Image (cartoon, rainbow, N blue to C red; front, side):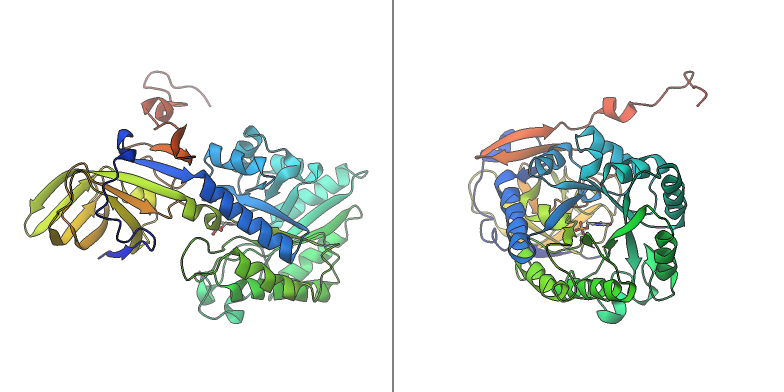
Amino acid sequence: MRISYQPASESFGRENLVQMKGHDYPTPYFVIDEKQLTADLSMLEESLRGSWPNYRIGYSFKTNSLPWLVTFLKEKGVMAEVVSDDEYRLASRLGFPDCEMVYNGPVKKRDSFQKVLLAGGIVNMDGRRELDWLEEISRTCTDRKLNVGIRVNFNLEEMCPGQTTMGEAGGRFGFGYENGVFASVVERVRRLPNVRIAGLHLHSSSKTRSVAVFEAIAQMACRLKREFRLTLDYVDLGGGYCGGLAGRPQYPDYFPAVAKILSGAFDPQRTALIVEPGISLLSKATVYVTGVVDVRDIGKERYLITDGSRFHVDPTMIKNSYLFHLELQGEGGRRRMARQCVSGFSCMEADRLFEYENGPELREGDRIVYENVGGYTMSLSPLFIQYFPDVYIRREGRLLKVREHWTPEEYTAGSCLYGEEREN
Ligand SMILES: *Cc1c(COP(=O)(O)O)cnc(C)c1O
């Protein structure tokens, strides 16, 4: 696949700048700009405050569960949105109490399900198993009032043609509305004397992340409320927002539009809005810094061997362009080259990031800095050939290390060697 160069809006034209500042730090590494992250979180909060003051934010752990990042967000009053027992335990370990968790996804475990439920956290049921658990817990905790949410699966593609991730095939999460399964779940939960349907979870992934998608989600919430005469503590819109990209929607575009629709059926005093942002919160704040370690000509191709990897910025190999800028070593005056193939450290031929067309000829020691790489990178990278890289935050112009490059020590933790096997 050919990967084309897309100039970064802000840094375009900076490519001949000599920026030696970062050069004391060994590449590759990620940097999260604390000021930008704070600004993006504030933008989210202000937009919600102005549109629906009764709100909670649940940060999507799967998007990037770097301990520094999630504890930063915890300090700002953000809840942990977790989708597995491992994520639940990570959030616990990092100090989130059970009542500050939003527990989603189809692979919850019974024990953590019960803990979050009894602690008064947000539990959005996603599958029949969880209904069985709920019935058991309701029988054994008769003196408790239990509040649950239900994840609904509905035909968003029909409301927003061409926009959803799965298209007409539909998604697999939650209980189907159109085929009546959602209705039967509502009925089943209503038979439990001490359980209330407190919320709806409507997360749906879209390709477009458009405002219209979230308007459709809000419309669906209104429709379900009316059809099933629900009195809800919360409507959970899920995640999937855009953020940090020029010409694309931002938080202040989504929430006034959503609030306008929700206010037709919900009272903001009575019903909270829950949002579960992930990538939109981190994108703009995060860069990945890589260095050119070798330049070689093979056949007609100029290869730039870098110490970064496509696995660190595009682990699912779906991107066809990158935002980046360059930090060149030494004086300017580079000649332009028609093509240079920017490739990664791994020994896979597919680990090529992009063909750099018509750029200055790069040399060993130059740096390529990828922008908007906060989501689905650090948490999704495989431990392939090189382990997780260093992570720094930028605070008042200084870089502070918040994660050390993994070493064979972390990699082998929990493993036993030949001759040390144990029974279970
Ligand atoms: C993935 C996910 C999110 C976050 O999605 P982003 O695209 O990173 O904003 C939020 N909620 C649920 C249920 C998810 O699965």
